[in-house]
Image (cartoon, rainbow, N blue to C red):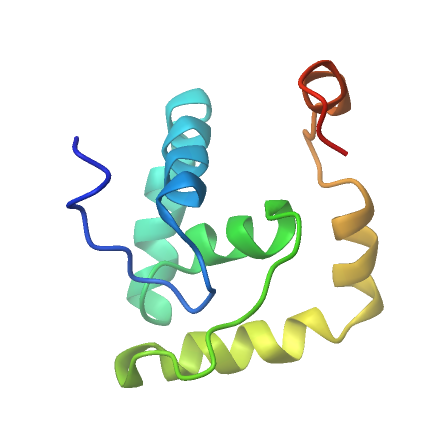
Length: 107
């Protein structure tokens, strides 16, 4: 898959490097793909992908004007990031391997 030509549909200001991280996560945990597809039927866009971006990006920012079709998901993300639970997850997301980041000089 050519990441530079694959469209990125998300409510976050995300780039191809974020997308590469998401694809690596899907490869490591294949059920993320099914969970994202199931959640998309109930909402829109890619809810699990966007949750991943919001939790794992070092400085996540929602897009100023997300695509209109993603507005319900953007609203959910806006409300979610204001909760204490979100802040706790950002401290150390489930399955987060701090050793990899330390070894690579990140964080």
